[in-house]
Image 1 (cartoon, rainbow, N blue to C red):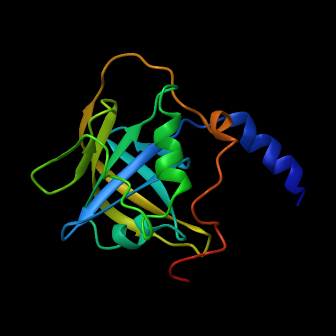
Image 2 (cartoon, one colour):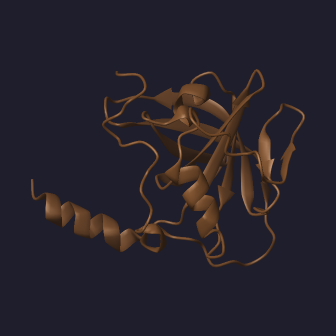
Image 3 (cartoon, helix red, strand yellow):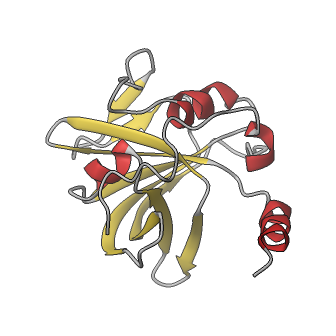
Length: 169
């Protein structure tokens, strides 16, 4: 396979970025996610892919709910915080306005464009990410926005590389 052709095709999609948050037994986690998509119209479902190298993946294995916060072009600093640091070393939520829903799910106050998701299944096909299929519990928006995209964060270094899988398949 031609890796450069694949990379060219994927760069052309220029995916909007999310910060996905979750919590289990009082342990909060969150990371930047570039792999995500609506996966059903009726019922409304959404798929998110979590890197196995991330603390969010480890917490997410036990979680039943997730919040997908759609980042705007003004949220580069949030992408840096949630994508450039590991939750095993830093509490990413410390200086943020964070609400929690009745289940303890952390909701970022700065990000009004979000989905609250309930896990349906996990799919681990042996790659460096695991797919979490979800049912959309709620959707909120602050109105029209310009999304922060993968091409906008080329200057960021990830907090963990994909080769640092927390749990190997």
